[in-house]
Amino acid sequence: MRGIFWIVKDELLAVPFKEGDIYGLSKSGDNYNHKLKWPDVRPAGCRKPFDYYPRGRVEYTNKGRPKIYMNHHVDERFIKEIMAAFELDEVPLIDIDGSEHYKCHLD
Image 1 (cartoon, rainbow, N blue to C red):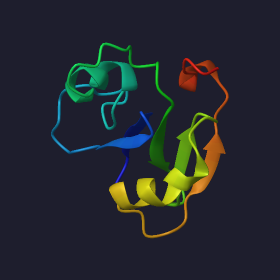
Image 2 (cartoon, one colour; image 1 turned 90 degrees about the vertical axis):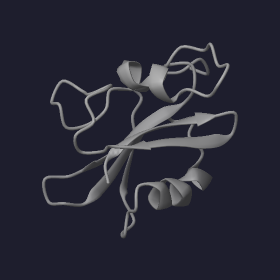
Image 3 (cartoon, rainbow, N blue to C red; image 1 turned 120 degrees about the vertical axis):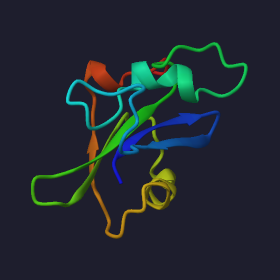
């Protein structure tokens, strides 16, 4: 599965993409946008903005291999948990994305 995730208070908050979901979609319409999806998934009582916590995205390459784009503050120990949450059967490519897109309060 594809989707987005955050590491909130040292716990994975995974949001796999569900076909037919209309809330929080990216421009392409076939995945989620962190900013748009955050109000629906943030923990109860959380008032932090969508870009406060380290975050990332699970996608697939054009050859069908899973790839995780993530902020460099996402600890590698979360990789197995991300794989399980997104039902990845093979070890994904990892792209530590240092762009503005994945920056968080720790940067």
